Image 1 (tube, helix red, strand yellow):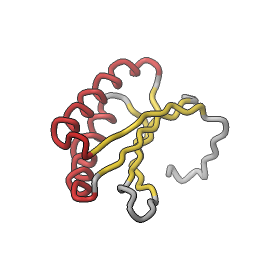
Image 2 (tube, rainbow, N blue to C red):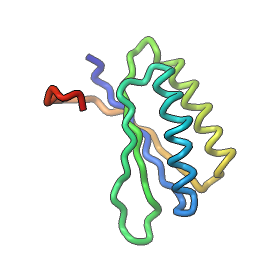
Image 3 (tube, rainbow, N blue to C red):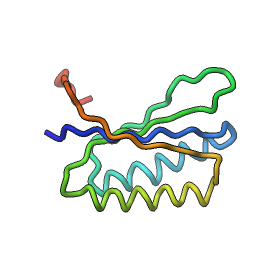
Length: 107
């Protein structure tokens, strides 16, 4: 099992949310999946009033696709910078999975 969980958190200016989500659905998640990311999940994070909406993408990846996946992700993030400049910002983290359970329903 791959014991690394990759997370990218995005802060998105409110007027850009719809186009950002469309980009994630149409471009980002499919490209990451095609490059070898496993179980891509897009989530919206609760935010307080006055705080930009935040979203997170989490996925696993096998070691043998790490370099190719990093190149695809860098290209996608360059597209976002070109399209929205500072209207969408992000940071990446790589987490060591300590415990994982599965309810057997494939969720």
